[in-house]
Image 1 (spheres, helix red, strand yellow):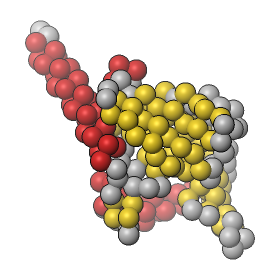
Image 2 (cartoon, rainbow, N blue to C red):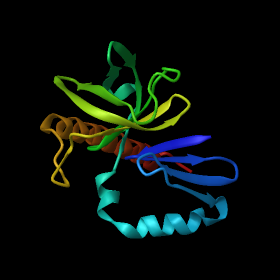
Image 3 (spheres, rainbow, N blue to C red):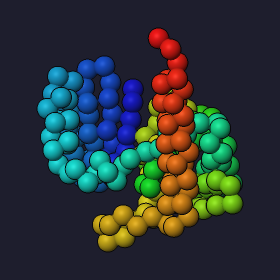
Image 4 (cartoon, one colour):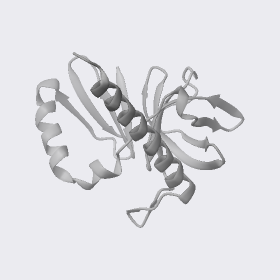
Length: 175
């Protein structure tokens, strides 16, 4: 079963249904899987700016990004999968220590740049955990800390250079 938390709503996906449970009101909505394409079309229509806001830069072991996640006295080393101005997806070996909805601290470092952010665990699938940074919005507008902007921009540059290098290698290879 896959699970995602959005505010007070827990979304669960099993082999037959998509279930939304509002923890505050106690309301439950259960939807057959056949209706998911209609729901996705509706969500895509809602707001184009969410697409831009959620752009994620893929990361790998060679990019130099160091990320740790902590909660209380627990500290978890991570293998970042991608990073954006609003969150991080990382592989974290933590069993059930970081449940959906938990507030955590994320430390990011790239070269001389380092920042600490508060986040909420929004998604878990095995060791793959999605964390949304909750201090990147002010009055509904995206305003991430400057150091996070610099780290994301540096990773974008590395990613673009790697893509350009692959393109040059492919152009030089005879058929």
